[in-house]
Amino acid sequence: MNEKNQLAQPFALPLPTIRRYPVYLRCINEMIAAGETHISSAVVAEKLGLDSVLARKDLAMAGVPGKPRRGYPARELQAAITAALGWDNSTDAVLVGVGSLGNALLGYRGFEEQSLSIAAAFDASPEIVGKTIHGVKVRPMADLPRLVKRLNIRLGILTVPNDAGQPCADKLVAAGIRGIWNFTSVRLSVPDGVIVQNVDLAQSLAVLSHAISAKR
Amino acid sequence: MNEKNQLAQPFALPLPTIRRYPVYLRCINEMIAAGETHISSAVVAEKLGLDSVLARKDLAMAGVPGKPRRGYPARELQAAITAALGWDNSTDAVLVGVGSLGNALLGYRGFEEQSLSIAAAFDASPEIVGKTIHGVKVRPMADLPRLVKRLNIRLGILTVPNDAGQPCADKLVAAGIRGIWNFTSVRLSVPDGVIVQNVDLAQSLAVLSHAISAKR
DNA sequence: AAAATATCGCTATTGACATACCGATATAAA
DNA sequence: TTTATATCGGTATGTCAATAGCGATATTTT
Image (cartoon, rainbow over all chains, first blue to last red; front, side, top):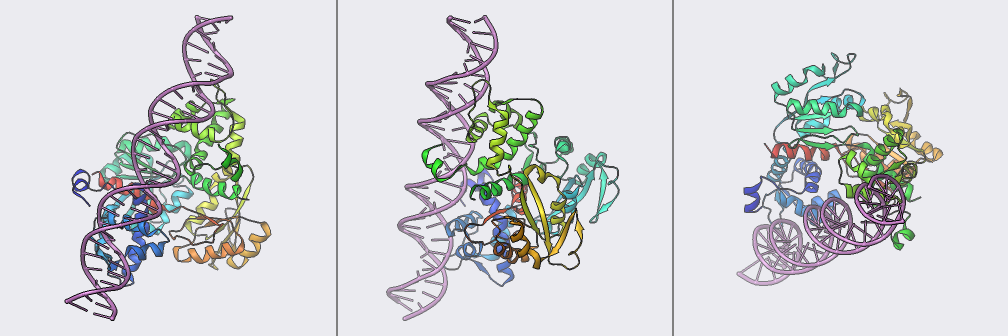
């Protein structure tokens, strides 16, 4: 974009923009698959039902120069957004807690798109340890530190019951994890430098149920 | 808050506040279970790791008058927040798409807390239709309109593959659904009056993977 | 070759939310 | 009874992102 961004941080993207990038990326992939060589922000906005100015600003943030009347070069834009998301290199993750939700995530095929692969799964329950679920063997919690360090894994997926949330998070942090994808309802406390991204279904449902009940 | 809000809508709560309400509610429930009769915003903020002013403002929004040096009356505050979320009355929902994610949601016990019960499940695949999963019988899509109308169901949970997202959403809307909890990656287009709440795992992961890859 | 037009890219305005500050008041302590 | 203090409730400020507007420019058309 400008000198400052280039020097200070590789990318100082607004958080909302980052959140929208996967949506743009899917759209761009489809357009490339359809044979497009250039991506116009107006077309993307139209397809996604977004404001055209917003789409233009977001796409411009990727740092790829676009051309008037043509749009952005499709391949370069695709590469830039993929890189901004860190999806250009495969990321290994560990999953902790093989309950129903952990099970579902292990079986979810869509992560390939985000270059995310679950390298190992852990559980505290002896009944589950040793089983192979969706091709991933479930290991005892005791193996976690060693395996995380050996495979140099930076991302942990936390799908344990609420009361086990903080203890398991602590174990992940101690093992050297850099980011936690938190599916519990617990607000985790972690040291600086470790990033937590919460996926609280209750929070999401709150907006919906409030709106439905309020407008009757 | 002011006259306008009182007249136009019962509560015009900021969206971020609504999203935080489930978190407060869990905390309040715990404190009541621990025997507390009054809830101080400072204590809540401390427990949840939030800014004390933010917590105070959010709790004040519930409309329950608090008392200096005591806090808010616990039961009343609990009731007010529960009501604001529309969780004071049981809400029936239908689930469309019994894949791995749909399966997990059917087995998720936590929805009771939010007074949400999945009354019926639907799938297009003949192999799945007829089976009973976590106590819910899977029905053919053809039964959807009739059942939704008969049970007067207002909420639909959409856990189908992406390419089936929009068609299934259309069916839900046609059946009279008021809100859709959308677990697909598709941006649904629905008529005014129907609310869509998206749970896009890719968007959530984007923030995490961007941060991890950017800070190495 | 000239004119028309679509799209990019920058700047300014608006709006919403979080944060900071300060006064009011009920409880507790002296 | 008086003083101290914790907590509520409102107002003001700051920050960030969405929206709007406008100029620049490359492509297309005539």
